[in-house]
Amino acid sequence: MFDFGFALSIIPTIGKALTTTLTVTLLSCIFAALLGFGLEIARRSNKLMRYAMRFVIDFIRSTPVLVQLYFLYYVLPVYGIKLPALVVGVAALSIYYCGYLAEVFKAGIDGIARGQFEAAKALGLGRFQTVILVIAPQMLRNIAAPMGSYFISIFKSTPYLAVIAVPESFGSALDIASDTFRYGEPLAVVGAIFLAIAVSFSWLIHRFEARLALPGR
Amino acid sequence: MTFAEVLAGIFEGFRVTVLVTLLGMLYAVPFAFIAGVAQYSARGWPHAAITALIEFWRSSPVIILLYAFYYTLPGFGLRLSGLTVGAMVLGLNIGAYGSQAVRAALQALDRGQVEAGRSIGLRRWQILLLIELPQALLAMMPTFINQFIQLVKGTALVSLITLSDMTFRAKEISQIHYDPVKVYTGLLVAYFIICYPATVVGRWLERKVGAGRKLVHDV
Image (cartoon, rainbow over all chains, first blue to last red; front, side):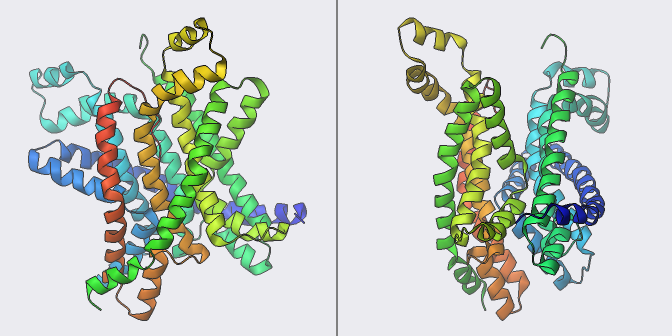
């Protein structure tokens, strides 16, 4: 029933598409983190921004990533913005996860001792310098683990991009399935690859978290 | 078509979205508690087995699990409806995340609680049911609310296995009247209307409960 020979034979095809999956993951992680950090810093700038940004974050978190993906893919061209599917996919994942990462950054910044902000002020650092030189490095230490697990979530969300025909691994598995009328092997292979990568990453994050922990905490 | 008409059309799929969510909860809640408690109390190879099961449901992309179960189960002679498969896969995926909240909340309890239970002669399962779980329940709530939102949003996936939920209806409307701006804005609004109240409650609970407690965070 399950043909191991066939399963082995399709690994190279799916493996090749894995480069797209990993590229999408990497780009989405970077943009989601930058956007999320921007949102969080903007949220802290004044009262109006606090409510506005909180609403933006809640809106992003209250709608499915699949729907956001469809929205960008079908609505942008109406306004004359024609982008390659891969770019739309990266944009959708970045926007969806920046809402979650902003919340993570919030917790990370809240965890920094007040004295640090006062020290930065006493040294005469500007707002920008304080954010980049004082807040960001300490925040990253606080949030390495939750941020890492959102990066894994981004990786696990890349198969959504198959619905807008980005040639990533899941899409290539579906292509093989519809060509050969065999669903079991391609889906098992692609599922196993994703599972193996996700589990290894989360193990690495655990190791990394232990190394980052401040002594005596 | 006016925006209101589009929105009304989308809400024709509301019943299916709710149905998948509720059926999914029937899988998610028991799985979260059973797997979470099992992982918390088991040692040795049973612990490894339950961890592997949780990781399988949690660390595999849910869209791949959905397709895998929907398209390969018939090959094993199991003919299940899209609704059954959708609810099961989404439910067990969310339940696996929930199990980590259960386990973490149990682990965060003071050890003295178990010792106190033992010293008054309670059995292990009585300690679990009467002392540990009631206290841990509060700490799990914010994560459970967040996972509930994830489940509602996750139901959009069943449109891919031909269930006519809100997302499926939106695509249908879009095929008949070409108006992606109204249709997909409407769809975002529809999910927002359902999930936003839960988001607000979850945020409030997190503030109430979160202070001083380390909770598993997850998507």
